[in-house]
Amino acid sequence: MAIRVAVIGAGAAGLCAVRHLASRPSTFSVTAFEQGEKVGGTWVYTEKTGTDAHGLPIHSSMYKNLKTNLPKEVMAFPDFPFDRNLPSFVKHSEVLEYLEQYASHFNLLQHIKFQTQVVKVEPVASEESKTKTGLGEKWEVTTAPATDRDCCVTEEYDAVIICNGHYSVPLIPKLPGLDTFQGQIMHSHNYRHPEAFKDKTVLCLGAASSGQDISIDLSSTAKMVYLCHNRDPIQSPLPPNLQQKSGIRSINGSTITLLDGEEVTADWILFCTGYHFTFPFLDDKCHVHIDTDERITPLYKHLIHTEFPSMSFIGICKTICPFPQFHVQVLLALGVLDGTVQLPSKEEMDADTEADLQKRLAEGLPRRYAHTMGNRQWAYNDEIASLAGIPQIPRAVQNLYDAIHLNRVKDLVNYKKNNYMLLDEENFVRLDN
Ligand code: FAD
Image (cartoon, rainbow, N blue to C red; front, top):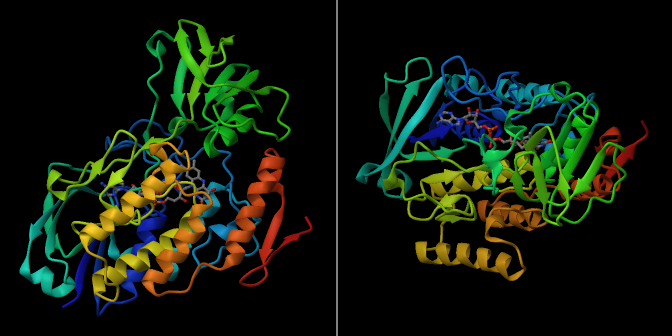
């Protein structure tokens, strides 16, 4: 009998899981649950903020003018390229179309229950599941229609793959005096377009991808944008009304005191300070812990629950090239379920996870970087691919990703104007525009 797998979420990660599960019907049967009306997750742009028509929190964090910060040549799943006629840096709507095409090409929609929210997942010890997966537990998955959340249904599965995304629940730092601020505040999750900030002074706090991109978008209409952060200064030329400043120390009414002692005023503070991980549907019996530094335990390779290996999490890592990483992670998770991958003991897996954290701390990274990859992602992806016994992500993807990173550092405003093509496993070429 097939191993019954529940997939939670039908964004890029969930679609990737469904694609590979559904391609092996004699081994797996798959049901994916998606609380929204369509596939695509965060790429389903909406003008709305707050809650949707059914009272569920808006999931997407897309803004109107967003173009990808990675070229489509590296963003793509390894087995499904983007339309080659598109430019390298595509609009959010074109990424959504790509994901819709992926779902339709691999016939995935039949496996997805839309407008169905997973409200509870709990493990139940089971001999039956043990014989199917060798992993020893069954899962009760309770879902509710988005349209009537009192109407719950509970079904049993042998495995659960969690793909609920982690760019939806805003993380706003506790700043002394924030409650006294006389201007307005917003988190980047709710940012949609720059017109709302016309002629205003906006302080963007945080200069990771969103902070950089949104502050440039804002500079098209705002009077002044202060990009406040604690990183090394951005070296690229910036618009004249976009100034870098240090992070916020405290706020007192209309005065914002920065870490270097400077005082500024602003009409808005826009928090580009990231997001919380959240798995509100996981019962305490799932033994998944998110600590105050946003570190999730107990996960082997940021992916497999070490106590319950029939539960996996796709897409936990940050600062990555997401879709290719989802691909290798999904295939490792499936290998664990079908028994082709033999995991080390729980103690060995937990020791590996701890060693990974200690290595980061020894390099001077704060604990909150426990799942952050950056340059580590390529060795990690290779390791996951090797454990799964599948081909590595072509080196050309890394080479182009690294080249784009350098271009972004040099010219943050214009780096998306160039187009690229992958030539072979190793090489890419920049095309004349
Ligand atoms: P999501 O896309 O968030 O999908 C999760 C899905 O799970 C959603 O559809 C949600 O409705 C569903 N869900 C959640 N909880 C439940 C539940 N309880 N029951 C049922 N369904 C549930 N990546 C790039 O590669 N290039 C970029 O340029 C890029 N730019 C980005 C810009 C922004 C502003 C953001 C926020 C992200 C960007 N990313 C980019 C990263 C992006 O998040 C990933 O590419 C990827 O889309 C994440 O997919 P996911 O499936 O993990 O999560």
